[in-house]
Length: 437
Image (cartoon, rainbow, N blue to C red; front, top):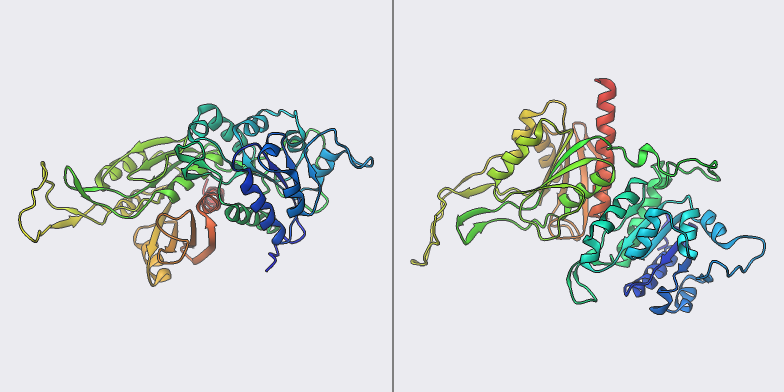
């Protein structure tokens, strides 16, 4: 079925010279199948991996590789492509093109067109894990995020170079989903990544800034986010924990960072790399996480408790490894401290956001938790639903406030949900301060 939000939309896809260029062919195919008009720009290096004819066949449009290959004397190709775009996607985005974008270089067809466009830009990085983690690359990503560029984060796994880590290009289906969600957001009156809402036929005056305050609505805000699963030790080698990967909390921290906030991430046990550009506090148990939250609570504007905290811990923690003796072992448990409830008791000016991972009666349980814990928002999800819950790269959530359901985001990458949640938090905080400055 052709998607209504992509039907007839003009999307320019920039393909750069990484091994993941072959995945860009699948992306172009999916965008075209969803009804978009796709035009492809390839760097010279990209043509070493995939032939331009592949993209021409899949997009049913000519492929551009050379700034000086002017095919229509009535237009300047890179300006025409830049003006036609409703969305500009760079996938895969190498460290090189990210650096060019961050510093305004224009030495080939792709970088020149990117500099000329006023369309929203969506970047899907792909590179070696050490390259991705390099301070220069991370700083360039922060610069671009500050200008309103959106990202589809790379995945974690086996890389072509042989390393295992973060750097794999996101799957084409996910990139297409994020593109669709972004265009739908713009169509509904949301902000567009390169500088505010874009009205039909709107043009920009010379010298008008490309990024507005709307692209950094959390600038100057302090945000505390908890992530991961807490560990409650039985002895030095055994413990109680849960299935949380930390992906959702990390996605929220990254989103808050990209929207301009000063972010502290309090991380327990996680299965993915921790983000750059935020303050990291490592903890293990619920007790340690409580102390870390309380220490930073008064100075925070927004507190997001996305961690999966163990509800119980061993009543006795053994100093040395317990030896196996009997066929059965009885373990006495006691409740752990309720971090969200304590935050709700301490709350003064803070916007407090909690999470509710449910398997049944989602709405009733979420609203009950919101009231009992004195939260402003609860993010609830059914962890048994496909593509949602622990360990997945996507999620489906319903947002509740004191009046009930306020938003529902289904089948989206966790990074996109993080961005939407942080934008909603920024709006709620600004509205509250406008009433009670």
